[in-house]
Length: 130
Image (cartoon, rainbow, N blue to C red; front, side):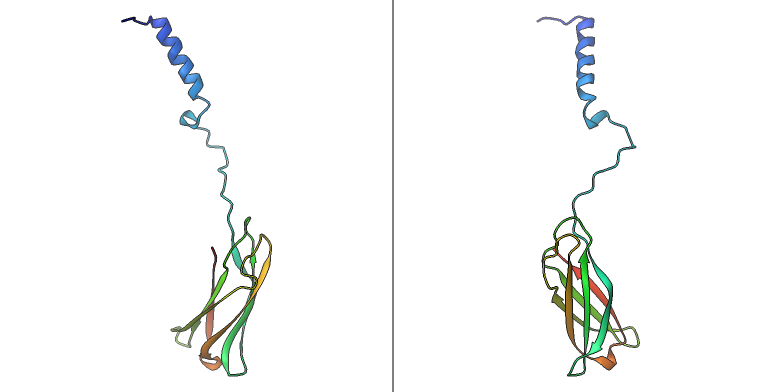
């Protein structure tokens, strides 16, 4: 068995350290900005409006916009309807038109609930997508 001299072991360790210094194992630079993944982000554009339809039921109309960096697919808009006591009395949803929103693209929605307009005191819009 051949024994390495101290100088050869030192050279091997030094070369291994130099080779590994290019990887993140020894990187302690906290000033780097982490890269963020590409994401869709659909938000309500302005305010949704509530009104009564021809049958006296509460309907909600509004628009959404994708402020993210990739296309949001299957954009669904829901409305949670509350009475005067802040009790949840109805939930309804629809698919935005169009259902896929590219970055900066706007879609619209119209949701009709089963709640009489007079019973719907407040509402909350919830937006989901794939």
